[in-house]
Amino acid sequence: MHTLDRINLLLALLVIGLALALWSTRHKGSQYPPLTDIDTAQVNELQLREGARLKWSLLRDAQGWTMTHPKIATADPGTVEQLLTLSATPSLQSWPATTSELAGFGLAEPQYQLLFDDRLVRFGDLSPTSRLRYVYHEGRVHLIGDGYLHHLLAAADRLLKP
Image 1 (tube, rainbow, N blue to C red):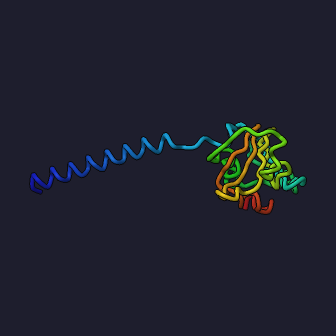
Image 2: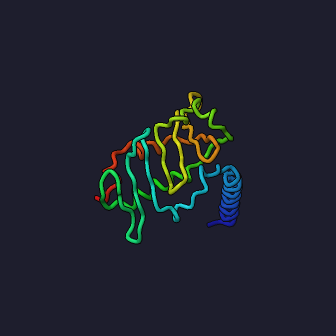
Image 3: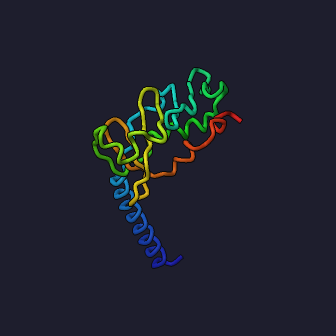
């Protein structure tokens, strides 16, 4: 390899390195906060309500997760972990809201409610403009991506160990 080729290669690598460092710095600052501050390692009970009906309930003990409703069976740890990560879904936008304001977002009587121990997350309507989901948690309405919905729509048996 000629000296000029080596210099060009070094300059190209330097430019790529600087571009990656700049990209990394910009994207670190633009990350969105999580929907909740729930420490999922401490969560011992998960419940999903569909309207007013309890769809399923899970409990954690020393052996892992067990479904307690609609039947008693061993839950699949990987699937439960996916459910737990819903608590950290990025909140793309949020604002404080009073109880009287929730109906406009489909949150007064939400289609789904996910309970992490005693902390409730309500899932409401889709925003007509952004197609993001309205979610209510501890006094704030959040807008989140709708990619999690299949977890809430799935039958309870999908949570069980194969």
